[in-house]
Length: 338
Length: 221
Picture: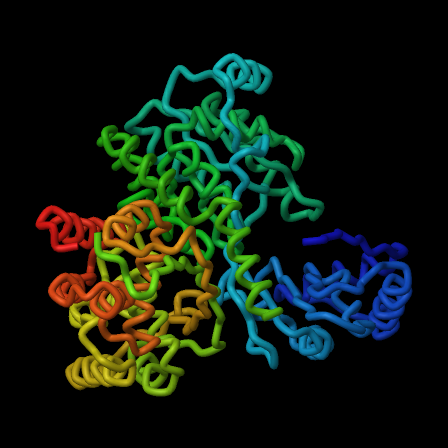
C-alpha cells in the first residue's frame, strides 16, 4: 500500500477553537464563538488545498482536521475519534455532527465512547507497542541506572500509579489507600506523572507534594510526557500497579503494566474494565477503601502476584498489542474498500 | 493415500466490530433490545464470544451472561443466560427466542431492577468478518492434519462456528469437505459432534486433530 501522513496547520485561533471544540465534545462546558468555528472551517479549506488528499482511503484523526471532509473529492473517508464523545455539549455536537455525517464511517475506541451517527461506527481498541521505549525490555543495568537517576530504591514493595496529577486520575485517593495499607505493610508509593495546565491540577500536585514532604515513602515524580524509559523502568520494578481513574478514558497504562507482568488495581471506567479481568489479572475498585483492601489482599497472598501478572501479560499479548490493532485496521480497510 | 475431489483451503478471519448505538441500562431494557437488534448482533454476543475470549475469560459463555453478572450483579440471570448453548440452535432467531424467554421468565419474578450508568450499560454491537486465505490448498487427510495443526486459530472459528451459525453450513466446513470431497462421512460426523461450547479454539483444534490422527492410524484415508 502507498501511504502518507499529512499534517494540518493554522494560526493560534485555529488551534484554540479546535481545542475548545474537542473539550466541548468531551463534555466540558465551553463557549464556542461562531466566528471561531467559521475560521476553523476556513483554515481547513486552506489546508485541503495544500495537502494531497487524493486516496482510496483517508483517515482523519480527532477534531483539528475533521472539517477537511467538506473538501473531499474521492475515496472513502473515516473519522477516527480517540476520545470519549458519548456525552458532548449539545451545541458543540450540533455543529460537529454535520461534519461527522459527511464521512463514510467513524471509529471509536469503545462502544461506550460513541454517539449515534448517520454513518457506521466501528470499534477498534487502542494498543501498546512492545518495541517502543515505553514497553521494550530493559537490561538490568539500564533499568538500575534509570531508577538511580529517579532516586527510587527497591528495598520494599513498590506501589505505582502512572498518570497525570488530576482529579480524574485520583492520585490523592491512591495516597489515602496507601495510608490504610501502610498500617499493616511497609511499602513505598510512587506517583509518576505531571500536572496539567489548570489550577485544579496544580492544587492536586501541591497536595501530593505535601503528602511526600511528610512521608518519605510517598514519592512524587514529576516527569515530562516523553519520559518513556523512566515509566518503563518504574513499571518493571513495581510490585502492584494502580490506575485508580474515575474519569472515562482508555488508560493504556493498565496494559503497559500488565505487559511487564504486574497485577493492576484499577478504577471502574469502561476503558479500564476492558483491560482488567477481575480476579484474573487484577481488580476493579470503586473506592479508596476498596483499593486498600485489594492491595492488602495481594500483599498478604504474594503467590497471587506473579500468577496474576502472567495472566495479564498473556491477556495483553493476545488483545492489546499493536499487531492486533494493525489487523483491525486492515480489516476495516478491506471492509470499506471491498 | 486418498485424494480429495476438491482441495480444502484454510481461511482465517479478522472480526471488525460495529457499534449499533443501542444499549440497555437494566435487565428490562436488555429484554426489549434483544427482541429488536439484528440477528448479527445476537451472533456477535453469543457465538462471537468464542472467538474473542480465552480460557480465563470464558466463565460466562456469552456477553449477556457476563454483563448480567459483572455489571448488573444479577447472578441468577447470569447463570440462566450462561447455560444457553448457541451451537444448538439451527437459526439465530431461534437463539434470540431462547434468550427472550429466559429474560422474560426471569423478570416475572423480579420486583425492581437497578438502572446502571451509561458506561456500564450493555452496548450492542455486531461484527463483519473479513476472511483471509491461509497457506496452500490441501488434498489428502494427512495434508489436512498438517495444515490444521499450523493454521491460525481464527480459521478454526471461521470453519467451525461462522460456517455453521451464520452461513448455513450446518456440518461446518471441515465436516462438509471430509464428507463430500474425501468420502469420510464417519469422520465428518465425529467432528460435527465436537462440543465447542465453553472451551477454546485451541482445544477444539486439538479434538479435531485427535480424530483425524485416529483416522489416519486406522488407515482410513
